[in-house]
Length: 335
Ligand SMILES: [Zn+2]
Image 1 (cartoon, helix red, strand yellow):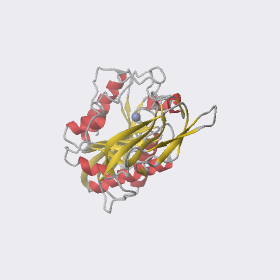
Image 2 (tube, rainbow, N blue to C red):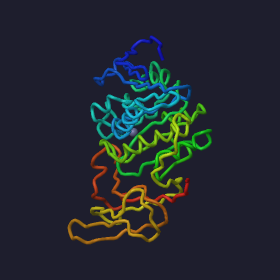
Image 3 (cartoon, protein in one colour):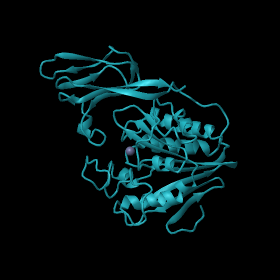
Image 4 (tube, rainbow, N blue to C red):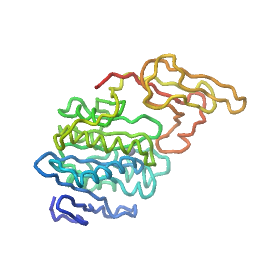
């Protein structure tokens, strides 16, 4: 990638690893650009790109990618790893899901949005210009792309497209109970890569805005498994748990107002009729039990209000009647 292109600033380099910053001029977010880590393995092989932090809240992805890069620093492998752990430093620095928009806004086409702006435009919005830079200088070099996001209340999950050769193998890498194998996230980074015929996935880890040790391990171990699958490293897959394709979903809503008290955890298997949790009336102390309507596994087990992805109130456990408090998905074994 020695292009001598404008705004391509190298950092400290070793024989195997180099780090450089892609400038992102006139962004108004008070950051200079994004750093890219490039680690060359010991022989010919494919190029794997890993990214995280697009909304500034997917921090277990940022930490997991960094952790894997440190593992690779003294590990023999074939091919090349490209890593962008902090894809949208403006959002991270400002602790904002969507910097430059009203707090809590889920507008998808804001000035700084990159999520559905791929592959970007050289003369587009601030976010589109960043996408264009990353797409032309980094994504274009990759054979496989994994992009990490995170959500607050729901189970970890992998999205890909089973019709793209090699994509289904990615589903068996991250130890997520749930895998969605039809692409319905058009415009996102992994979807655009899938459209070019290359395997790609979006991985949602559980937990936003914090670095969850269990999620970090899944990110690091899952990327390692992708490298095993791609023939970049030797060894067996490090599969931590059974995995499934997500099937039909069943929504459980609060029958009355109150605190929703969960009695199960995300990703736990459940049977029809099993107790999921209860509503606690904050004025009378009355308890109202909620049971699972079907066999499946738990995708979500918390009160999930409007915009829960980006607003603290949306995650508050006090439910109004009709609020979503649990979601069961039926599951089809993958391994
Ligand atoms: Zn995200």
